[in-house]
Length: 306
Length: 221
Image (cartoon, rainbow over all chains, first blue to last red; front, top):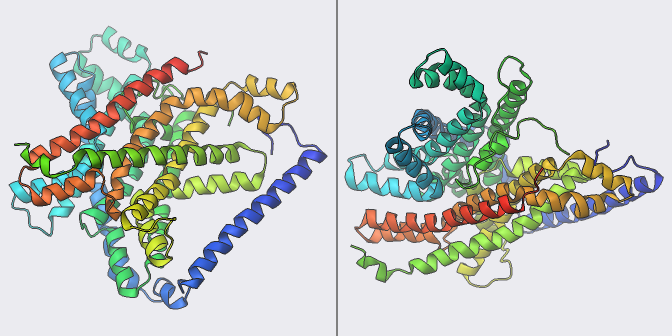
């Protein structure tokens, strides 16, 4: 294994590496041993606490599966609503008319500056005060509302960045052959930017799935984390339950992330398109703020050190 | 309309939010830089550890991590992090959870920064006989950090918003106060406006100022 950051290893470097590896193993083993001791002291490694997950399906059919279903339902619904909303907002921000551009910008920047939990709490109160949604359904509505408001504004930025990242020649050529502004957007820019945005949209789905857990912890929405909590109360195994639930989240999100980066590399390699792709890091940057959002999509192509 | 504010310590709650943000920011910057150094370093085991850590922790919801630190670490394993009263314990647990989670994003931001450093810089550094740690800490990272100010600012802003998750374990920060006020007062819109304004005041200037700093310090290439 070599890298531009260090030389090919000679005998001394190899010995040093063995030393570092040994030190690291010792430190890591010490941490593992300490965790094991701590868990064992409190009897958290008893088989009876972990048994529900390895034998029988009761834990899955009663708690985990219904919770997971709610998580995925909320995430999917939020994505489906936020996507068109985000597209409209993103395109509005690129409008030539000030009275369209500025309000869209204000809406997007406002909802990106506010934590999604605050939006969910707000949604819950709004539904309680102004609608007759039953109190059982309210947390679900509130979670989806919060997720939609926040993610529509993030997706708006993704759409905007995707369109801005396309080469200028595309819209110039389209205008040269006499297309109107709407046609340029609808026929030329949007179709190309959608492919460029696909990896970013999948990455955003990971964020949505993770944020549904907020609804469970604060709004009593019975999603995966909340049902894990109930399950832990029933079996008396909070550490085991949370570990299993964390593993489920990891599997879901890791597959989504891997899919996104596979898409990204595939689209980058493709010769047919303009080669513009918005990747994982771009989404992380967009999720932050307005002021530093430029340069998104510009870093296309792995040319650096690592 | 805003009379109810007298009864609540809104500034105090936002001060807690700021404290959570700053402490976690420092902690995750240190831990994230270490992770990034391990990820690009010559020791395969450390590289593997850092990669696995980032990929695992990044994919767990922050809420799960924070709940685990409270229900698992504190209530089941009786780890108190040196504090004796509940508010302090929960505050420290929340900071711990935020550091563990945010460090993965810091690591990725710094790696993106390292990627902007031209290959010639590292090659020249090696050519004059610098060791890996000298190449990394004297030549590459100083340039990488200047390029990473932008991405790191975004991580900081995301962190500011993420501190609200601490409400899940009862840390009395802004979102927790908002929930309390909504339960006790009728002025829903006014309450929401105050809290939203508070967060806008925290995140927008951070973005503008650090965005300007980032442009100022970035290496012109």
